[in-house]
Image (cartoon, rainbow over all chains, first blue to last red; front, side):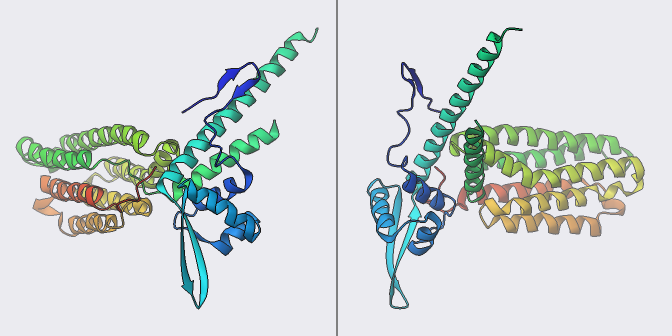
Length: 124
Length: 205
Protein backbone atom coordinates (compact mmCIF):
# COMPACT_ATOMS: atom_id res chain seq x y z
CA UNK A 1 0.00 0.00 0.00
CA UNK A 2 1.31 3.42 -0.91
CA UNK A 3 1.58 5.69 2.10
CA UNK A 4 1.74 9.41 2.53
CA UNK A 5 5.05 10.99 3.34
CA UNK A 6 5.67 13.22 6.33
CA UNK A 7 6.35 16.86 5.42
CA UNK A 8 6.76 20.08 7.41
CA UNK A 9 3.17 20.95 6.64
CA UNK A 10 1.92 17.56 7.81
CA UNK A 11 1.05 14.57 5.65
CA UNK A 12 1.22 14.90 1.87
CA UNK A 13 -0.56 12.22 -0.10
CA UNK A 14 0.71 12.50 -3.65
CA UNK A 15 -0.86 9.14 -4.47
CA UNK A 16 -4.42 10.48 -4.06
CA UNK A 17 -5.67 10.29 -7.64
CA UNK A 18 -6.67 13.84 -8.60
CA UNK A 19 -9.21 12.65 -11.21
CA UNK A 20 -11.07 10.55 -8.61
CA UNK A 21 -10.57 12.97 -5.71
CA UNK A 22 -13.49 15.21 -6.59
CA UNK A 23 -16.79 14.83 -4.77
CA UNK A 24 -19.06 14.26 -7.77
CA UNK A 25 -16.65 11.97 -9.65
CA UNK A 26 -15.99 9.99 -6.47
CA UNK A 27 -19.74 9.59 -6.11
CA UNK A 28 -20.10 8.43 -9.74
CA UNK A 29 -17.24 5.95 -9.45
CA UNK A 30 -18.51 4.57 -6.12
CA UNK A 31 -21.91 3.97 -7.72
CA UNK A 32 -20.33 2.25 -10.72
CA UNK A 33 -17.83 0.14 -8.77
CA UNK A 34 -20.65 -1.25 -6.63
CA UNK A 35 -22.71 -2.00 -9.78
CA UNK A 36 -20.18 -3.87 -11.94
CA UNK A 37 -22.77 -4.56 -14.65
CA UNK A 38 -23.15 -0.82 -15.17
CA UNK A 39 -25.80 1.86 -14.73
CA UNK A 40 -27.95 3.97 -17.03
CA UNK A 41 -27.53 7.74 -17.13
CA UNK A 42 -30.86 8.33 -15.32
CA UNK A 43 -30.02 5.87 -12.52
CA UNK A 44 -26.59 7.40 -12.08
CA UNK A 45 -28.06 10.91 -12.02
CA UNK A 46 -30.51 9.91 -9.29
CA UNK A 47 -27.91 8.07 -7.22
CA UNK A 48 -25.39 10.91 -7.31
CA UNK A 49 -27.95 13.76 -7.09
CA UNK A 50 -26.38 15.62 -10.03
CA UNK A 51 -27.89 17.65 -12.84
CA UNK A 52 -27.76 16.37 -16.45
CA UNK A 53 -25.05 18.86 -17.38
CA UNK A 54 -22.91 18.21 -14.33
CA UNK A 55 -23.11 14.44 -14.72
CA UNK A 56 -22.28 14.64 -18.44
CA UNK A 57 -19.24 16.79 -17.74
CA UNK A 58 -17.90 14.43 -15.04
CA UNK A 59 -18.59 11.37 -17.20
CA UNK A 60 -16.49 12.88 -19.99
CA UNK A 61 -13.60 13.49 -17.56
CA UNK A 62 -13.83 9.90 -16.29
CA UNK A 63 -14.03 8.50 -19.81
CA UNK A 64 -11.03 10.59 -20.93
CA UNK A 65 -9.08 9.10 -18.02
CA UNK A 66 -10.20 5.60 -19.18
CA UNK A 67 -11.86 4.96 -15.81
CA UNK A 68 -15.28 4.29 -17.35
CA UNK A 69 -16.76 3.31 -20.68
CA UNK A 70 -19.93 4.85 -22.08
CA UNK A 71 -22.21 3.16 -24.60
CA UNK A 72 -25.16 4.81 -26.33
CA UNK A 73 -28.08 3.06 -28.00
CA UNK A 74 -31.76 3.63 -28.68
CA UNK A 75 -34.42 2.05 -26.50
CA UNK A 76 -38.11 2.57 -27.48
CA UNK A 77 -37.07 5.40 -29.81
CA UNK A 78 -35.32 7.15 -26.94
CA UNK A 79 -31.55 7.55 -26.64
CA UNK A 80 -30.11 5.51 -23.79
CA UNK A 81 -26.67 6.15 -22.26
CA UNK A 82 -25.08 3.34 -20.30
CA UNK A 83 -21.97 3.67 -18.09
CA UNK A 84 -19.69 0.94 -16.83
CA UNK A 85 -16.45 1.03 -14.86
CA UNK A 86 -13.41 -0.39 -16.68
CA UNK A 87 -10.98 -2.93 -15.18
CA UNK A 88 -8.35 -0.19 -15.01
CA UNK A 89 -10.87 2.19 -13.40
CA UNK A 90 -11.73 -0.41 -10.80
CA UNK A 91 -8.05 -0.91 -10.01
CA UNK A 92 -7.39 2.83 -9.70
CA UNK A 93 -10.49 3.29 -7.54
CA UNK A 94 -9.34 0.54 -5.12
CA UNK A 95 -5.85 2.07 -4.98
CA UNK A 96 -7.43 5.45 -4.26
CA UNK A 97 -9.49 3.91 -1.44
CA UNK A 98 -6.36 2.31 0.05
CA UNK A 99 -4.49 5.64 0.08
CA UNK A 100 -7.53 7.47 1.47
CA UNK A 101 -7.93 4.87 4.21
CA UNK A 102 -4.24 5.13 5.12
CA UNK A 103 -4.51 8.91 5.25
CA UNK A 104 -7.49 8.74 7.63
CA UNK A 105 -5.76 6.13 9.80
CA UNK A 106 -2.66 8.35 10.03
CA UNK A 107 -4.81 11.32 11.06
CA UNK A 108 -6.61 9.19 13.68
CA UNK A 109 -3.27 7.91 15.01
CA UNK A 110 -1.93 11.49 15.11
CA UNK A 111 -4.99 12.72 17.02
CA UNK A 112 -4.71 9.87 19.51
CA UNK A 113 -1.05 10.57 20.24
CA UNK A 114 -1.83 14.30 20.69
CA UNK A 115 -4.58 13.46 23.19
CA UNK A 116 -2.23 11.07 25.03
CA UNK A 117 0.49 13.75 25.18
CA UNK A 118 -1.99 16.32 26.51
CA UNK A 119 -3.23 13.84 29.14
CA UNK A 120 0.35 13.20 30.26
CA UNK A 121 0.91 16.95 30.76
CA UNK A 122 -2.12 17.38 33.02
CA UNK A 123 -0.81 17.74 36.62
CA UNK A 124 -2.09 15.21 39.14
CA UNK B 1 -12.75 12.03 15.42
CA UNK B 2 -16.21 10.44 15.03
CA UNK B 3 -16.31 11.64 11.40
CA UNK B 4 -13.00 9.91 10.72
CA UNK B 5 -14.26 6.62 12.14
CA UNK B 6 -17.43 7.04 10.09
CA UNK B 7 -15.31 7.55 6.95
CA UNK B 8 -13.29 4.41 7.74
CA UNK B 9 -16.53 2.45 8.21
CA UNK B 10 -17.79 3.73 4.86
CA UNK B 11 -14.57 2.67 3.11
CA UNK B 12 -14.90 -0.75 4.72
CA UNK B 13 -18.54 -0.98 3.55
CA UNK B 14 -17.63 0.03 -0.03
CA UNK B 15 -14.87 -2.59 -0.14
CA UNK B 16 -17.32 -5.23 1.13
CA UNK B 17 -19.84 -4.30 -1.54
CA UNK B 18 -17.19 -4.38 -4.28
CA UNK B 19 -16.00 -7.79 -3.02
CA UNK B 20 -19.55 -9.18 -3.15
CA UNK B 21 -19.77 -8.30 -6.84
CA UNK B 22 -16.36 -9.74 -7.70
CA UNK B 23 -15.56 -13.21 -9.02
CA UNK B 24 -13.13 -14.93 -6.67
CA UNK B 25 -9.92 -15.92 -8.46
CA UNK B 26 -7.94 -16.98 -5.41
CA UNK B 27 -8.28 -20.74 -5.90
CA UNK B 28 -5.44 -22.06 -8.05
CA UNK B 29 -6.39 -24.75 -10.61
CA UNK B 30 -3.03 -26.53 -10.32
CA UNK B 31 -3.26 -26.85 -6.54
CA UNK B 32 -6.84 -28.11 -6.70
CA UNK B 33 -5.82 -30.68 -9.34
CA UNK B 34 -2.99 -31.78 -7.06
CA UNK B 35 -5.47 -32.40 -4.23
CA UNK B 36 -7.48 -34.62 -6.61
CA UNK B 37 -4.35 -36.68 -7.25
CA UNK B 38 -3.74 -36.72 -3.49
CA UNK B 39 -7.21 -38.23 -2.99
CA UNK B 40 -6.45 -40.92 -5.58
CA UNK B 41 -3.11 -41.63 -3.88
CA UNK B 42 -4.85 -41.91 -0.50
CA UNK B 43 -7.30 -44.42 -2.00
CA UNK B 44 -4.39 -46.51 -3.31
CA UNK B 45 -2.71 -46.21 0.09
CA UNK B 46 -5.86 -47.40 1.84
CA UNK B 47 -6.32 -50.37 -0.50
CA UNK B 48 -2.71 -51.44 0.21
CA UNK B 49 -2.72 -50.94 3.97
CA UNK B 50 -6.29 -51.64 5.12
CA UNK B 51 -7.63 -54.96 3.89
CA UNK B 52 -10.84 -54.65 5.90
CA UNK B 53 -11.44 -50.98 6.79
CA UNK B 54 -14.64 -51.80 8.72
CA UNK B 55 -12.44 -53.58 11.31
CA UNK B 56 -9.92 -50.75 11.38
CA UNK B 57 -12.03 -47.63 11.38
CA UNK B 58 -9.37 -45.60 13.19
CA UNK B 59 -6.90 -46.35 10.40
CA UNK B 60 -9.51 -45.37 7.80
CA UNK B 61 -10.24 -42.09 9.59
CA UNK B 62 -6.53 -41.39 10.03
CA UNK B 63 -5.87 -41.77 6.28
CA UNK B 64 -8.76 -39.60 5.12
CA UNK B 65 -8.64 -36.93 7.83
CA UNK B 66 -4.88 -36.55 7.26
CA UNK B 67 -5.50 -36.31 3.49
CA UNK B 68 -8.23 -33.70 3.99
CA UNK B 69 -6.07 -31.71 6.43
CA UNK B 70 -3.10 -31.72 4.04
CA UNK B 71 -5.31 -30.69 1.10
CA UNK B 72 -6.89 -27.92 3.19
CA UNK B 73 -3.51 -26.66 4.36
CA UNK B 74 -1.99 -26.57 0.87
CA UNK B 75 -5.11 -25.04 -0.71
CA UNK B 76 -5.46 -22.51 2.12
CA UNK B 77 -1.84 -21.36 1.88
CA UNK B 78 -2.00 -21.14 -1.90
CA UNK B 79 -5.35 -19.32 -1.82
CA UNK B 80 -4.02 -16.64 0.53
CA UNK B 81 -0.87 -16.03 -1.54
CA UNK B 82 -2.80 -16.04 -4.84
CA UNK B 83 -5.54 -13.75 -3.49
CA UNK B 84 -2.88 -11.25 -2.37
CA UNK B 85 -1.56 -11.23 -5.92
CA UNK B 86 -4.84 -11.22 -7.85
CA UNK B 87 -7.21 -9.17 -5.66
CA UNK B 88 -5.01 -6.29 -4.51
CA UNK B 89 -7.05 -3.84 -2.43
CA UNK B 90 -9.69 -6.45 -1.58
CA UNK B 91 -7.60 -9.27 -0.09
CA UNK B 92 -9.21 -9.44 3.34
CA UNK B 93 -12.77 -9.10 2.01
CA UNK B 94 -12.29 -11.75 -0.69
CA UNK B 95 -10.70 -14.31 1.65
CA UNK B 96 -13.39 -13.72 4.29
CA UNK B 97 -16.11 -14.04 1.67
CA UNK B 98 -14.66 -17.34 0.40
CA UNK B 99 -14.27 -18.69 3.94
CA UNK B 100 -17.79 -17.62 4.96
CA UNK B 101 -19.24 -19.55 2.05
CA UNK B 102 -17.28 -22.77 2.40
CA UNK B 103 -16.55 -23.15 6.13
CA UNK B 104 -20.11 -23.88 7.38
CA UNK B 105 -20.18 -27.06 5.25
CA UNK B 106 -16.69 -27.99 6.42
CA UNK B 107 -17.57 -27.50 10.09
CA UNK B 108 -20.84 -29.43 9.65
CA UNK B 109 -18.91 -32.34 8.09
CA UNK B 110 -16.44 -32.32 10.98
CA UNK B 111 -19.19 -32.25 13.63
CA UNK B 112 -21.17 -35.05 11.97
CA UNK B 113 -17.96 -37.12 11.87
CA UNK B 114 -17.38 -36.57 15.59
CA UNK B 115 -20.99 -37.45 16.43
CA UNK B 116 -20.94 -40.65 14.36
CA UNK B 117 -17.58 -41.76 15.80
CA UNK B 118 -18.70 -41.20 19.39
CA UNK B 119 -22.40 -42.03 19.29
CA UNK B 120 -23.13 -44.21 16.25
CA UNK B 121 -20.04 -46.26 15.31
CA UNK B 122 -22.27 -48.77 13.47
CA UNK B 123 -23.25 -46.05 11.01
CA UNK B 124 -19.71 -45.00 10.11
CA UNK B 125 -20.17 -46.55 6.65
CA UNK B 126 -22.19 -43.40 5.88
CA UNK B 127 -19.18 -41.11 6.29
CA UNK B 128 -17.89 -41.08 2.66
CA UNK B 129 -21.36 -40.23 1.35
CA UNK B 130 -21.95 -37.55 3.99
CA UNK B 131 -18.52 -35.99 3.41
CA UNK B 132 -19.23 -35.71 -0.30
CA UNK B 133 -22.66 -34.18 0.33
CA UNK B 134 -21.23 -31.58 2.73
CA UNK B 135 -18.38 -30.81 0.34
CA UNK B 136 -20.88 -30.43 -2.51
CA UNK B 137 -22.97 -28.04 -0.39
CA UNK B 138 -19.83 -26.00 0.35
CA UNK B 139 -19.13 -25.74 -3.38
CA UNK B 140 -22.73 -24.76 -4.17
CA UNK B 141 -22.59 -22.09 -1.45
CA UNK B 142 -19.43 -20.72 -3.11
CA UNK B 143 -20.97 -20.65 -6.60
CA UNK B 144 -22.09 -17.01 -6.33
CA UNK B 145 -18.52 -15.76 -6.79
CA UNK B 146 -17.10 -18.61 -8.89
CA UNK B 147 -17.67 -19.45 -12.59
CA UNK B 148 -21.24 -20.70 -13.10
CA UNK B 149 -20.01 -24.12 -14.30
CA UNK B 150 -19.03 -24.77 -10.68
CA UNK B 151 -22.71 -25.53 -10.04
CA UNK B 152 -22.26 -28.76 -12.05
CA UNK B 153 -19.29 -29.78 -9.88
CA UNK B 154 -21.30 -29.18 -6.69
CA UNK B 155 -24.04 -31.36 -8.18
CA UNK B 156 -21.43 -34.05 -8.98
CA UNK B 157 -20.46 -34.27 -5.30
CA UNK B 158 -24.10 -34.34 -4.19
CA UNK B 159 -24.84 -37.15 -6.66
CA UNK B 160 -21.81 -39.26 -5.71
CA UNK B 161 -22.59 -38.69 -2.03
CA UNK B 162 -26.16 -39.88 -2.42
CA UNK B 163 -24.94 -42.87 -4.48
CA UNK B 164 -22.48 -43.80 -1.72
CA UNK B 165 -25.25 -43.62 0.89
CA UNK B 166 -27.52 -45.76 -1.30
CA UNK B 167 -24.95 -48.45 -2.10
CA UNK B 168 -22.16 -48.15 0.46
CA UNK B 169 -23.30 -50.80 2.94
CA UNK B 170 -22.14 -54.41 3.33
CA UNK B 171 -19.03 -55.49 1.44
CA UNK B 172 -18.59 -52.03 -0.12
CA UNK B 173 -18.56 -50.23 3.23
CA UNK B 174 -15.65 -47.75 3.54
CA UNK B 175 -14.21 -48.91 0.22
CA UNK B 176 -11.18 -46.76 -0.79
CA UNK B 177 -12.76 -45.85 -4.13
CA UNK B 178 -15.88 -44.45 -2.44
CA UNK B 179 -13.57 -41.54 -1.61
CA UNK B 180 -10.80 -41.76 -4.18
CA UNK B 181 -13.03 -41.77 -7.26
CA UNK B 182 -15.49 -38.95 -6.41
CA UNK B 183 -12.84 -36.65 -4.94
CA UNK B 184 -10.21 -37.51 -7.56
CA UNK B 185 -12.58 -36.75 -10.46
CA UNK B 186 -14.38 -33.92 -8.64
CA UNK B 187 -11.20 -31.99 -7.82
CA UNK B 188 -10.02 -32.33 -11.41
CA UNK B 189 -13.40 -30.96 -12.55
CA UNK B 190 -13.03 -27.99 -10.17
CA UNK B 191 -9.54 -27.43 -11.53
CA UNK B 192 -10.86 -27.43 -15.12
CA UNK B 193 -13.62 -24.93 -14.23
CA UNK B 194 -11.09 -22.65 -12.50
CA UNK B 195 -8.76 -22.89 -15.50
CA UNK B 196 -11.30 -22.33 -18.29
CA UNK B 197 -14.51 -21.04 -16.68
CA UNK B 198 -13.70 -17.38 -15.95
CA UNK B 199 -14.91 -14.74 -18.37
CA UNK B 200 -12.03 -13.36 -20.41
CA UNK B 201 -11.24 -9.68 -20.03
CA UNK B 202 -13.28 -9.33 -16.84
CA UNK B 203 -10.50 -10.11 -14.44
CA UNK B 204 -10.22 -8.35 -11.16
CA UNK B 205 -8.00 -5.35 -10.81
